[in-house]
Image 1: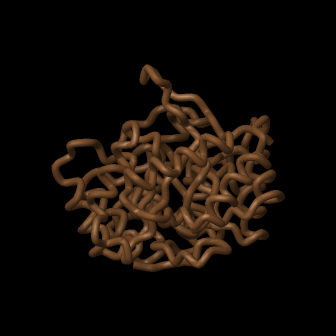
Image 2: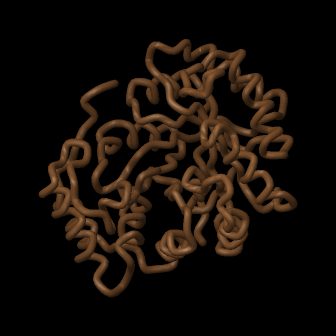
Image 3: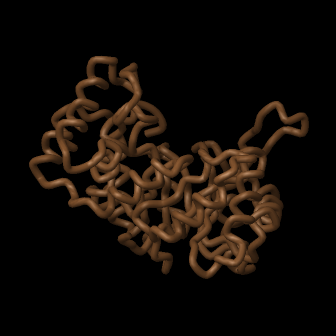
Length: 298
């Protein structure tokens, strides 16, 4: 496994991160998958209080019991479940963040969260109040660092200007190169790490039938997936190629891969072991589909 320091933090995280959202309550091999991932060198595990109404955090905490010194634990806050369980509402208020961190710590069975992230955000939020909450938690020793999970350029730029975030989690793949226009250069310039999610575009880049995705029609999706397959050849699995494309960008610290099965874990970790994409392969992939741009929240 390869590792990279996350932005301005001291967190040396694996270049493949374990996205825990795909793991489900009652999944019999939950703990085994976590153990095998650690054995393969993955040390970054990403969850959220939103996932399965907190049960994802509970199960991750159980699986990581006794392994605290081997792992970096990241979770998220800001999405508050309604009392009737019918859905959730965005709540970036200080009082909610200070309350929700206590619940996450209890579910995860830890004393301090390595990376605490805002699970969304809008430009209409009182961003100063949100930042104040995170700074209080750092001072109290309940979190080591904080970050943002967002694809909105205007929100990202505000946090860059006003806060001490060490990371931004955002969607990035061959099918979603919108961050390349402004977000990735801005984050690189300010030494803020990028955690890339969605590297296989929900499977459309590797094994799912083509269908419209973002601004691309079915034909364009099929063409890019074919390019992934061509570049992969006999050397690597298409999933590994899709992940390597993401990791090739200098702004990306780690690809956070949603893992639910042992096969998916193997594909993700083999992406690091196999030889990386060369310049000609990168060129083929980039030319297989037109670049897209953010149309909103600029």
